[in-house]
Amino acid sequence: MEERGEFVIPAHPQEVWDALQKPDVLKECIDGCEEMTLTEEGMFACVVAIKVGPVKARFTGTVKIEDPNPPHSYFLDVSARGGAAGFGSGRAEVTLTEVAEGTRLNYEVQGTIGGKLAQIGTRLIQSFSRKMTRTFFDRFSRRWVG
Image 1: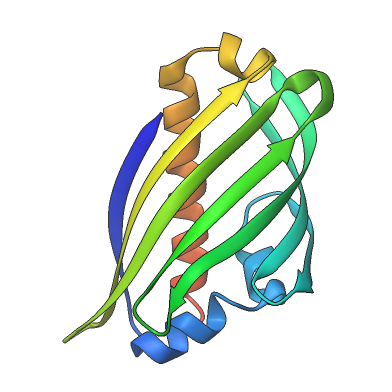
Image 2: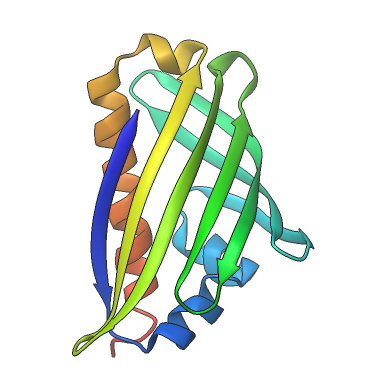
């Protein structure tokens, strides 16, 4: 599964970079996130409850920041397990570019899923993924908008 996109965030790249490193900000912005903990520099543990079509589960996972180039880019390695619901893993490249409106964040993700999640179909998973991404960046952007 692959996905890419961009969002413009009304803040300076360093502000965006700093906010994306904070567990409380991530927890607040990720739909269904119950826990987000910094376990070591650049490594987070999380618990997220989701419902995708008929599959509902709590996923435990890790997010690791690799090759950080503050405040311009980094890679994210993500791994999550949801028991019988399945698993997911992926790698995302994130770049931040200063623009007149603030910061343009571009992302490119390559991921895999297994278990019941894989059985419900790629279209439903991609639709769910896009919705989660939009929700995250809508909430994230509101941090700087009245």
